Length: 606
Image (tube, rainbow, N blue to C red; front, side):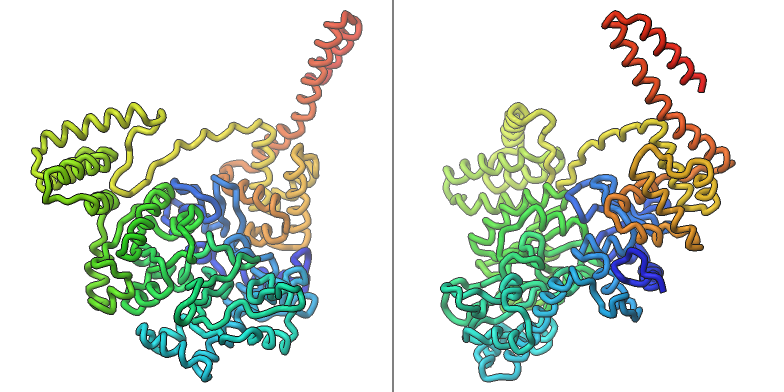
């Protein structure tokens, strides 16, 4: 059983994992893909973009992003998306596919990844302990009464693994000591805090209802604790750690992602309680930010799953102001944005309790309004429309919102509504609106001409023209593409060119290809990529594999490519000789210049 360069994991296991994890299924759990010919395309989950440049090739079982250069097979995708090492990704995928194995060292994970694995394990154990304490002890009774009063039944408490951290200093400390966890490591993971005098550690969470926070794969990476009764802070999150990054984490994404894809929409909320209440009400495509303002990273993460988001923040002034701030961030990420309106200052949880699940889903979520409509409602709250001055002031503010719209039809719709509200003729409002648009267009930087619609935000950046590669470079890429898909082509290149590639990475990939076929393996680009174990070479090989391979006489193509590659060093030498000849001519050494000229002629004949 060969383990090669794969972190001690047998090749047979890697091959089985790739066989059981189709690239489209693997990527499709994280990225919304649409078919385009023989490819699948979507928005790259690894960088922010509005126009899809992320490509999956089902027949070759690889992915590649033309925007950021990320690429590889299904294992590489899981490594990148979940922040795993190669052995961790293979182990996780093997477990998911029920492929039993032990690595070459007799364990499951390479030594360098053990700290990460211990932190994940500690979080799993902590969640189980808190959940047990909530449901089965006297300590947990006040927390359970609080949850019952919020309408949380046993099914919800179990599904979201809600727990309770007792109001003691050393519940977790003792728990970890008994299980021989390193307390310093547990502090780094955000579960403990060090004492001020440096004499030891105490529990970070005390006297709080505990909500486990999971990554999109469903592994617990942090906690949020809500205080029982009065006190500050109301919510306490785990600190940033190797596992947890607040600006890249959305609560409930692990459970909501399939519903988000199915609905073609994501509902964004403020609190954990709101998300859980909406889940129970049948709105299961909702997530929340982690007690922090919405970031560009959050928006990019959402955009990999869907194009439409409904902001469902609290109905009070603070919630509506936060919704207003979130709109441009989401629109910049290329999303269609709608706003759910909650009356009487209620939050989603309170609304569901007051009016019921059906009304919440049909009127609040399905009845969400455009961003323009929301801005107009938000502006209107500041004016008394029973007074003439109030109407005039509101009309001016409303026109500023409407003038931003690029669509004449949309402007007309909102201007008609405004005309009815303030009792001013449509023609007068149109004139004022057009004057505002002229002023806007003059003050905008060049290239921005008021193309904001009512919330789709799908502006497209012009794609740069691809750089034309030098002939030898293109020939080397073509050779490698052919070698990867044909063992006979690799043998021909080995005999006629060997390692004489001009680009070092191409020479390295070629040597890996020769070694791969020398082991008697059949052409399989996904398996080959796993044998590289070098991030740069993987990206290079994947980008080469996105090329279309030539049809017709492949031997002729191989010969032409090899000739082009061999010719380049001589061409380079000729250029260097010409530069040298010009230098010596300038210095007045005409005899040496004549010698160099004859050397150039000899090289060109070759």
